[in-house]
Image (cartoon, rainbow, N blue to C red; front, top):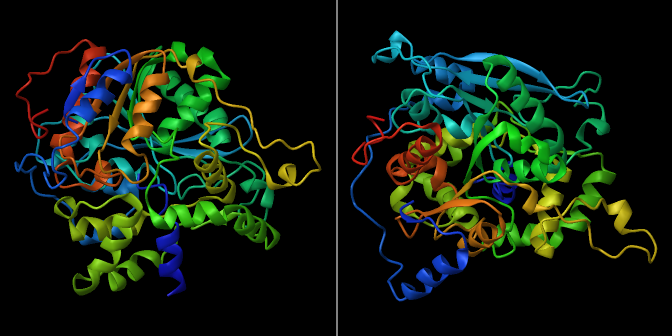
Length: 447
């Protein structure tokens, strides 16, 4: 029962279109929403369905490289060292193998694409839905050279040159600030050095977007290494989030973090072998409503997009681990409504000199084209938070709202129709910057 409660509390922020506005300011598409606010929220968008999931129950127990290989795609594994000594796994999906049942295909696009995952997750975000559905496979089928990063402290990057994550509290002395400042540039540089390209496309989901804004705010020279940013449910502003579980955590964050730090608990929900069997029991067909209700509270309620088998597979890979400071940092930007740097508790406890105003990140330094994707029913990144970010980035290229008005945070990587409602749109956006035009009638399975 304790494991279930922990899982429910810390499903948290990790869970992660088709009205398209090419506008320089969000004020115009905010007015669009006001004009249509009288429409019933019962409308769930088009009834057309994506191809069936081609996944199996055993996928909950496989690693990401095993999944990629199983479904007929080439996979290469790299280990990348950051400037502060963390060792990160970086995976490359460069095309199909003959075992996929489709013609083998090597990259032919003008530039590679790098994908970065969400909080408490891993690069599994990009492959769990399987062929013809998951973004990594769709990109590989479209000829992209796909690279997937794993942040420090996660299942695939729980390593350091000198520090033992099981014995050293110093290993966990990071938040998503360090992921943006050290992990993302190290991973980007490895992709560019390996491929020989000067620039790449960047795709991020939730935390995977904010860490790039951290990097560009702190090291704006990295704009020159990027072509564009595909920002999927960008978790920069989050103070309008709706989930009761998450709001409860935020309200208790400071005393909870203090108690856990005092107890030496600096790692939050690492990936353990017992999680997948536990989920199989707790989320069996007869009891799957338990897991559904937890998901609905954290991410948003959209029953028609949830596949029970897919949910169980996801919970075999999630949680993938994070630092206590990552979650604390999230709680701070939610509570203060400021996209700002981390304030350790020991700093806050100092005498009257503490003002509670950590330095803000400078979004104006992110000068690359930014494409924003958001869901109308996203409990983690409220649509107004996404539009606020869109209004503040200096080079907004496009904003896509998912056509399904019930689309939630988790739907971006788990929904039955996400290939058509989200991934196909992202592929078309990438083609705008890669110099290749995709027919407007292309379907996810044929891209």
